[in-house]
Amino acid sequence: MSRFVYADNAATTRIADEVLKEMMPFLTENYGNASSLYSLGVVSSKAIIKARQQVADAIHAEPGEIIFTGGGSEADNWLKPIARSLAKKGKKHIITSCIEHHALLHSMARLEKEGFTVTYLGVDSEGFVSPQEFKQAITPQTGLASIMFANNEIGTLQPILEIGQICRENGILFHTDAVQAVGHVPVDVKALGVDFLSMSAHKFHGPKGVGAFFCRRGLPLDNLLDGGAQERGKRAGTENVAGIVGMGKAIELACASMEENTKKLAAMQGRLIDGILSSVPLSRLNGSRSHRLPGNVNISFLGVEGEALLLRMDLAGIMASSGSACASASLDPSHVLLAIGLKHEVAHGSVRLSLSDYNTQEDVDYILETLPAIVKTLRDMSPLWEEIVKEQA
Image (cartoon, rainbow, N blue to C red; front, side, top):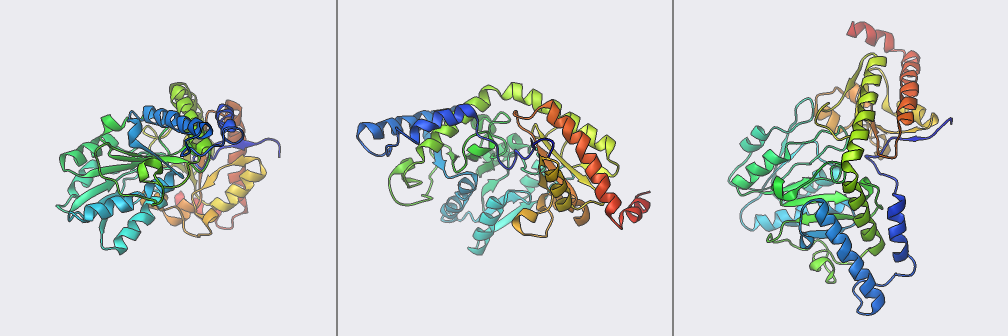
């Protein structure tokens, strides 16, 4: 392996040195339970209060609107008690999209088994949900909607502002899964008209196993976990103080450097997209070119298997993700890539490269030197490649 290039930051990020330094005292000397009244517990309690303020400031919320969770998936699961509460008022219809994260889609499937009706909106070829189609899907029974802020696979940024306005006009509670967006693009829950929002620390150089759920002040929220009085009694369990502290520091750092990082990532992203598309025939960019997360590059290569591509890239020291669900022991291609109109065989030959501010222009150079050669090797080995070329001619 000549070098190591980590380009799977949409899956998880490395923890920032400053974040780890902030966390360490709460793993060693300041290990008190935040619910305890003695001094060691008070230190932990004050640290959580500070982190809650840091997270609130990052999305223009109030500290009392932030509830710490075990991650983004747990936060998405809060939609189930919210929906059940709305059902008591006769609101048993939910609107979402077909490209949501599985934490959301599986929560919707669970609610459907309980008698809820869920409308799964389709997307266009770039992965956008249509605000007009969203509006047309509303019924008198619609009480809740959930549209992700940014897609985790193709990076498309959704028209959250427009959809939020439609929800307000129709008295619909609006949730957005912003796990990929927070810390990378500006998020203002007040301006966007968002009622609920999910986020996760390990997507912006914080620790794994901690996230947060935003719930707009004044909205009733049933408990997710019953037990003690932690998180206003909504999410019981002794707090992960070190993780929460790490999340607060990570989100503060991410927001402080967002403008600078966006410029850097956009430049590397543009070079990657242009370089790959120009050097690899029969390749295509998935998602929007202009309205996408900085650093996200998702490209399909006709005539290539995603699993083989990933393994070859790994041998060359490049860490990335595939457009097929091989990591989850599934033979099915990505539901997102199918939703934007890709055929199964094209979706299977896709790769997602997701960069962070820790990546360099030298990393981009190495990917551009290595990836086209790997694709060519795999195509040369394929007995079907010549036939595919003839079909495309």
